[in-house]
Amino acid sequence: MTAVTAVPPRRRPGNRQALRLLVLVVIVAVVLYPLLWMLGTSVKSQAEIVNNVGLLPERFTPGNYLDGWTNFDIGFGRFFLNSALVSLLTVVGNGLSCLLAAYALGRLRFRLRKVWFTVMIGTLLLPGHVLIVPQYILFRSLGLVGGDWPYLPLLIPHFLATEAFFVFLMVQFMRGIPRELDEAAKIDGASPYGVFRHIILPLSRPALVTTAIFSFIWTWNDFFRQLVFLSNLEDYTVPVALTLFIDSTSQSAVGPMFAMSVLSLLPVFLFFLAFQRMLVEGINTSGLKG
Image (cartoon, rainbow, N blue to C red; front, side, top):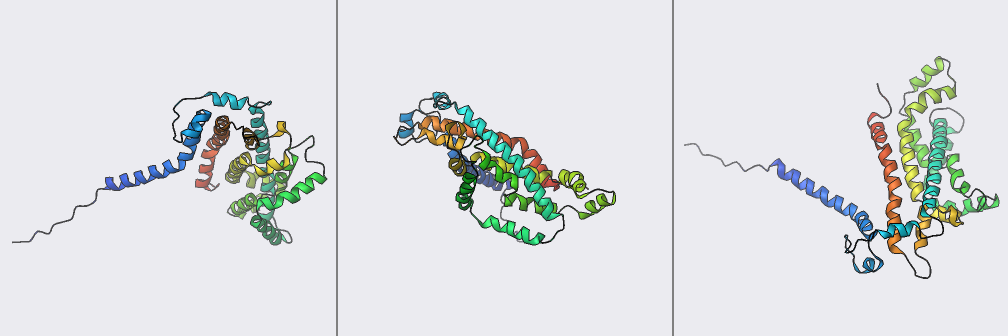
């Protein structure tokens, strides 16, 4: 008589998938909790904000959005326009200047090219706040702080390829483009500008999209530099204007502040949503199709 060996039951794949799903749900809940709390607080009354720490309001108060939009002598929409202007011009400046600098450092050959590239990488070690005081002294001596064009101190550095991170990103991307394309274009009579215009620029779209997305998000959320260089109320951007809801007299309008904070997230979300397909496509194809 043959002995029958008992086979232990296998764990069902469905149990493992359910466990993974549960872990993902927990992670998403932890990540989204601050956003949901801010959204719920934006429709709470002033007294309920202090007493009710839950997500859902006991009394729905949508008037916070209207109060926040009209709380100052200048409509809050002006601050949105100021932020949009600075962010979009920063995107243009970083995209143009960093692409040209990356093309020179990554594709052209000239003396001390590696030295300049090393110096540029070295600037990544400097915290951004260290440069604020020298920049402020420089721009103030040039009469650009508080003048007729208050945003020039915020924009000029971006048009001079001072964002070493984006230059490094584009240089590394261009190094992945075969140099045979450059040589073929030169054989056909293309100048260095022609190579850049017809070869490098079209293939660098993924790097440009990545630069545009991060430039817009970082500039839209920037607070310290804009607080230092902007002094007039009508020139304030959204991050700086949000601080006006809490003044030194403790007369704070927390509900309207959270309402405007929720609205300030929409441009960033819409900008990323508009370009995420191009970003993912660029990452998958690496900008080259054979």
